[in-house]
Image (tube, rainbow, N blue to C red):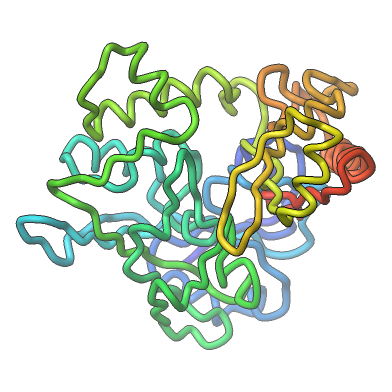
Length: 340
């Protein structure tokens, strides 16, 4: 029998460390738990929020409804041959420990995604990515429970409709599917190493590594992230708050005439991705603090809660940043964080 609690403080359940209460709160550790929950009157009559690690979430107020904490765990091998291994991972499994587990076994494909906070279930929803690699590169399928019917549904890679920090689970299926497991295929040899993006190459050079392995790449990524991103256990944050905007080549070249230093990276369809951190820094937000809400001193893409900032204060700061970037560059920043 699942237990549903009332008026639970969510501060310890979100990495921003925002004080907010859930009207109702429960945890599910199995598909049976979820099936039982779906049949309950509280689930049927209240809106609900599925909570993993709380690392991509900004709570701006108390949640009037049911918060469901995902505690599904376990990893199993589906298929294995000399070249690859296919694993099914329960959605409540923490992401970074799973990456380390794969690296230790010399299974390649997600080493560039080391030290990303959160759970396995959030990974396909967000299509997490870093340093030239995205989760969609290794996903075979995603399984989830239809919250309206209780039926298990399976989504192929194509059916997940992955995009830049996007998936079908953030769009038309938002709040309708409880992701229960993710199936990934990783390489066992002849790994496709990605060392060209960001500071990986420089970090490997500083580590005196000339022949990278998935272990050394993971170590390099961890070192980079620890250097530039604040630890949420020390200072409240949800990582990158905004997506890197994608603009037309024409818009980029017009900006280049006014701002010669503006960085840009060509993508498909003749579009250009511009680093949001650079735009925010040019608007002089880096290191700014307003009470306990602020912009990180080393990474302007990260908004922080220094101690007792409210969700509304963080949100207000984010919107002010967004407005200033729009006014200066005619570029609209889109939050990467799920704002409730």
